[in-house]
Image 1 (cartoon, rainbow, N blue to C red):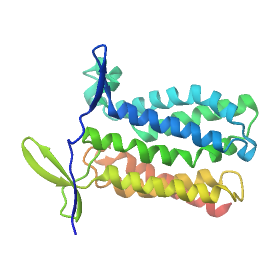
Image 2 (tube, rainbow, N blue to C red):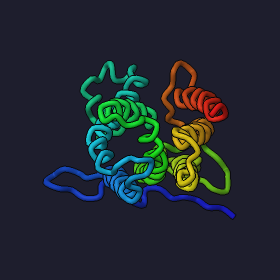
Image 3 (cartoon, one colour):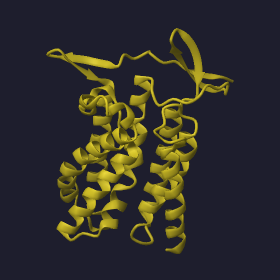
Image 4 (tube, rainbow, N blue to C red):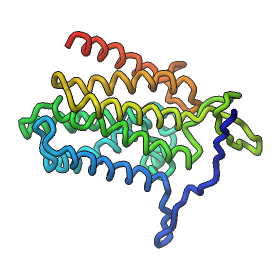
Length: 250
């Protein structure tokens, strides 16, 4: 049985307001964030963390994460951006990285937690399950933009794209990651109810996500590179080893 995912069925632009195109990608990402807020509200009080504090945190965390996601991407595409400095600020043409977003988010959480005198790992554990849920939703923006796909394949499950008038069948890596992160969300939601120690949910998220990202990244054609190595694979492997060790120790 073959399942072929067609692309180009949904235009990138959802609608236009006063001459400004509103992309489906932006709508999907915004929807994921709103669902994240709803999930956090439902779990108000978990680990002694108040939703109001998390809401206030998000006002700083979300824009910081977006900025850091862009900085991370630009840093490893500097060969291009060094000659096109204006394009650094052109978010509408894409170019963000999830690891950059996570770095920005964690840095913001650390500052906020210290200010509010809240344990950093408790905030991270509170938020850890909803992050992969938002990732699972957000990846569908890649489908609409026809990006973040993999190499050519003849697997029964594959995605059809057209490049320079030539039809190709590739790995739907956006779908692989969407399914895997949804599974991580379900796993963390179940374990989160019976947390054994502070940091457990955070460590499990990092371990699970870095594991699946290592393999999925190996299939992608648009990886950020450092010399001949894929940055996300190097980082994923390092995170998997380090946090597996921490979890076993705990």
